[in-house]
Image (cartoon, helix red, strand yellow):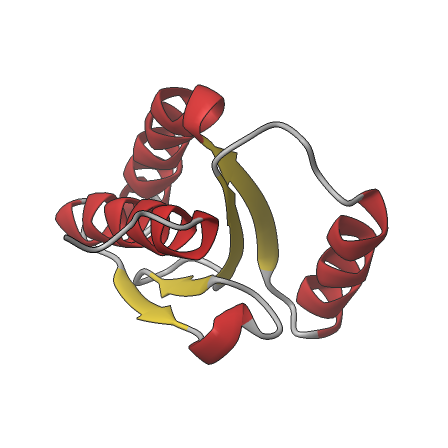
Length: 104
């Protein structure tokens, strides 16, 4: 039986987030080796979203700042999604989607 290593657990969470976003209508791409970010999501009439997925709340602040800067350079939004904020982020995205549709 395969052991669930931290890498496998992290990858499984990335796919959980990816599938959630796809159900909301996003086109989502997972970056190889999570470089420079875990996921990039696109939705009509919205800025692209660069997403970092973390299972725990222990976060490398330098990595987050570097990723935020990259997102800004690419005119994208940045989201840090953890197990503890996943439901809250989903609600926020539903509001953004609704607002994007009303601005058509």
